[in-house]
Image (cartoon, rainbow, N blue to C red; front, side, top):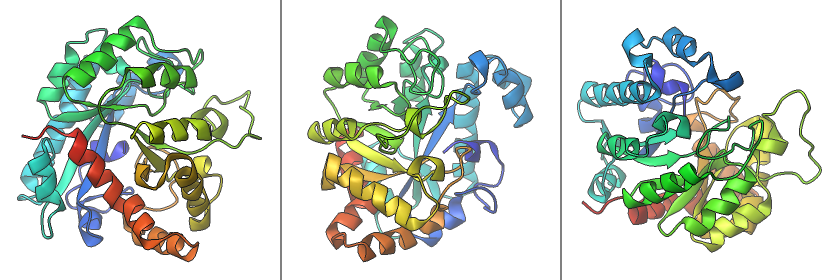
Length: 326
């Protein structure tokens, strides 16, 4: 999720795709809030002005790490304002508290885009200390760690990127392959020896062709089924995005078809809902749409235990294996 992090109404609710009242209304245990610190224009040159327009003070846009810290401060403030109804999930006990009946809604903090590190791998430990538990080295543009699937060069993992992946694992931070180029994914997979994910993506239509006008499209943003298969074979988690542009349709049946393809490629235990709500794309559903999606999957012939896994149980099991035990 993206723009949800910059508005004032998350606890009170009322705008965007997700907020605390809607999460509570359908029984969410955990939501993922993802920090992006670079605006996806040419070279990120408009980032400072973009974040200032969202209300960040000048001091908060002095660096990408400053942006990330400002956002984490805001989430911590939301937790305080919620009276205990919203908490940041840092450990397995935090997770279990949130998954218990009547527990608070948990926030899993994620950062996407190696730009935030500003060339300093030591910033990973600093983000981890703030509560960040998942990190995607790529976002919509290439950076000095790895190429993006929608980047201009879309190259592979750099030497700095290998340092980043090693340090993420040393710090116990979940590596997220989302937005990586195919070369980057292929080069990162052999380096992973703890739980990892591709948090929000869909499967590529082999007939789709990249647009000459826009780098960001289903042909460049989605991944081949072989990638989902490899993620599943290695015990990773594949999150299916809910963006209509990437699903290839605007109905719940479009999502059901994509989820069925993902299950066939990655396996029943390795698929979850990745959403990308409030991420600047048109969504098929908002936070209250998961029950309707579950009903559509059941009507399409998916087994109840498979649907329970996709809607939440697979992600919960994954987080239990990935988060620090204490």
